[in-house]
Image 1 (cartoon, rainbow, N blue to C red):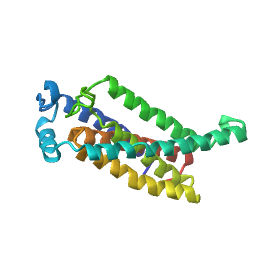
Image 2: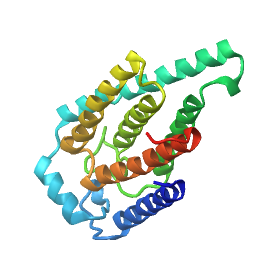
Image 3: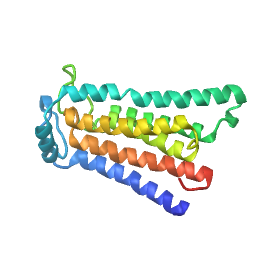
Image 4: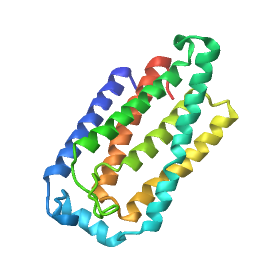
Length: 218
């Protein structure tokens, strides 16, 4: 696939994220949330919420598992820091390490954005408070951190044994967090789906950036 096509797909995915978010905000809106809060896609969201209910055990499991991806972030931070100290120049740090650092900044920006721009609230109160629910931040953080690690390791560090272990850990942890959030009932179904769509978009752009830098396919 040419770079031009890859770039167009990236734009299409960004458009899909924006369109889906607008649909969640304005389509089939009803006051089905706690304290009369309004929720888009209310019919399907209400169906899944009644199907799974609220399970704090799965919520706690996904909360604990949610810390694991940050260990991956810390690992790349250590690699980047070590390279910076020993090579004595940011320009000599592996460009892929710099790229994944910038990717983390982009993911953080998306997280903060949706904390400020509230699309809907959780289907259940957390510590007696309404909290922003769209998109599922745990879904985005887990998929983006784990997914970007797999992409980066496959491209740059495939011969390093530790990278193989990181990939195996990422493959196990990400689904646990995703399904844990869904089954726990602390998010609407549309929140989880939105998190997946946004994550796929961010990961595709990250992948495209690495391909562009390295002039080869992953």
